[in-house]
Image (tube, rainbow, N blue to C red; front, side, top):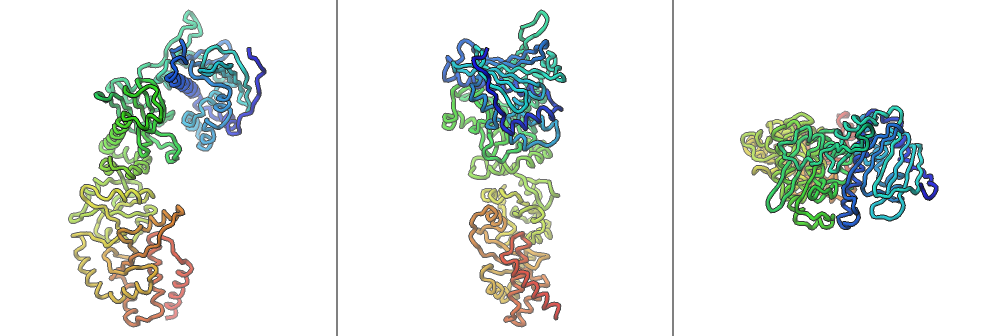
Length: 629
């Protein structure tokens, strides 16, 4: 009997939207409600055990943590109960009545319109409790907080946008949820159905899930439905691929399958087990800096925390899995983890195992690794920043698009080296905004002519990757758009032609540079071009055009730098312009011709013009001269 009248409260707007969705839309996979409520109960047991680590008296004599499922067919009620941490009044309002900890808004923003896919998002966004309204037209929750001597509380709602909350009688800690099932959901009162769903979704929970018999001679007896030995504690040769997939889905609250996994036990000075999974799909918030990441941490099979970021670096934040240590204290906290030498050694082992797993995947199943790279490659590239311990492994794992492959295909540095031309000594790459811009760059012309492969670095992060990735297998990585081009033995003929043309065009190039002192530091002949009249090249130590563009888009101040203009001595425009200069070095139209060529070189590399209106004026003037000639 309650001691005061229940208080009626309104759900937050986003929660009301979610309830409407649960009740009226997501019917294609309603069975997941049991998975979510049992998982919530398991979390409550974990929290109770964790709080008791610093106060052994909290649990009292009731130390056997358990989840119970009971079907009351006579009254159409399904009960899920636990003796976990429970909630007080403020926690009920915070956890159930508002968006504060439910992830409701992100869930609503991520809906796709496919009912089955949308239903499977529920667990990933922490809105699992509300799935009860998929099968129930009235939900009653009675709960009492661990360690508090105050009242128990009774929460009730029909999913109509409001709920009532009042004091209740409950002697023991924990939570009981009563689902008054809808007529078309009475199938979930059948014990065979409950048994099947708990086995399917919750078979790997660390806590026992008991089905309470409701009929016959066994009425009131409990049947444990889940295997109590965690998957990672079993010998790995006894765990099937199907069991790994099921456990991964239980771990991630998702329906995708892992691409690969690694199950290892380390014994010796330290003892710990790692179970690592490469996900099949990237989460929606992979690049959200506040997104929790890391592995689930257990100590001697006791759950300590999810998303233990101390176990993996941010550039491996896509990895999922479990670490179970025999050497950490049970009351370990995040503050202790940051300083703990055992955690550091486990961290190093988990990183090595993750990288070995990815390298094995890349060798044994290149097609699957290519799929992984499309999902997570940009994250793995972050490992090149401030990381000197695993550069060799990352160099073998990194992938790029290239001039040798069609769009959407990737090559590794090992394959690039295998495909190098005889006499080629460097690995060439080009940074660009996208593949189309890279393919249209004049800097590629001689490479295309010689059949030399060029890597396309078209992710913004690639500009920072190559600050660290400077060589592979003894071969330098060279930016095709920077510095004087050296193709080694491949360009002996071009070098001779370049030296000859330098004398022929010497005065013309000096005049060109002199008339554009604000933009050019030098004009020189090049063997880089085959079809275009000229191109702009950055110095070896200067920012590249693509990096300048990225920094400017980020509203960062970029120092002005002069560029080198390289001319193609065989192009008719350069030949005729040189002849015009020789005929009259003081020709008033020469600066306009120079300016147009520089602006066209900027456009060809994808850069913005400094003076678009001035460019148009110069082009119009030159066209007028040509038409009047």
